[in-house]
Image (tube, rainbow, N blue to C red; front, top):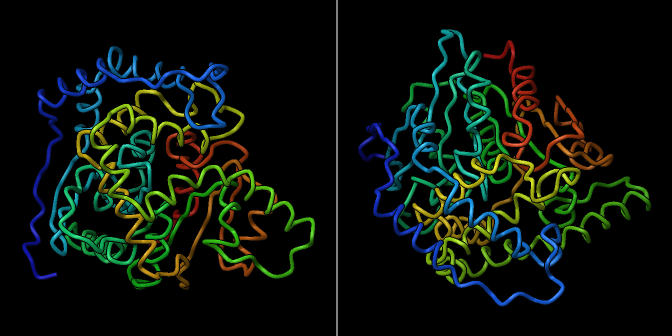
Length: 380
């Protein structure tokens, strides 16, 4: 990493022509012919139902104010910097507290730095918050080349923290961000104060695939895990497509804003808390559309899918062991989460919530902020 290490100020300013083009495309949406009997706006059994999708499109076209959201995002400091040939976007919010701990927040898919919009103001009393965008996501585009996956991204994040002047720092992540969080601790234990992972009960669906099945489970417990896996099977279509054919789905996502909206909005229904899984979203509708619009304006539907392909073909083990203090906060939990994911007792702090889901920073930011503050308090 010998290139120019400059940190360049950045301001979000989507050209008006891009906004006009989006509104024109939304107005000219070519809808599928409705299937008789598929008129329940709450039925996600075959994917996102058209009545609900039409509601979102109408709001995106006529009720959503990108400029207002853009102004809110610009209330934080934004930077870009080039690491290993790739441009990275970074949002940061500095604390007025001179003793504040630098905290790196790592997002996943289909999230972005927008995912932490409601969380950041709850943290700046105790933390200098840094939120980089994954390569190929948001303003960390376009991709400079192939090969950007968890390992390479981890090294880039460490370099970014160095450039920002943070020799020691704390890390939190969800989804893909959980992988970069764990790997930062494994590779840079002298720099990482502690790691905090946000997870949810759906993670049991990956046991036996991405994560090992621990020894000592009873037949009933194995059956419970298999039940979660079976219930979650329908959620894996996006995963297989992005793992193996990112170019194919990328073309559709880049050309159709409604296609991009459907691809993401479905997950913000089926991955959020089941108790609130209705077209009255578990997350704020404008925040959801801000996240989707970011993917649209930056053409991240295609480039973020490449991250999955690279990760799938890298041969890298998702788990990375370290002696750095660690914590998990599990939302919409399942009784077997601790027994399965902390079978060896390596996770020092374990907190479970019935609330929330896969996107805790959007669903339950206050709970997540409390957990982060409690775990990292006194660590430096």
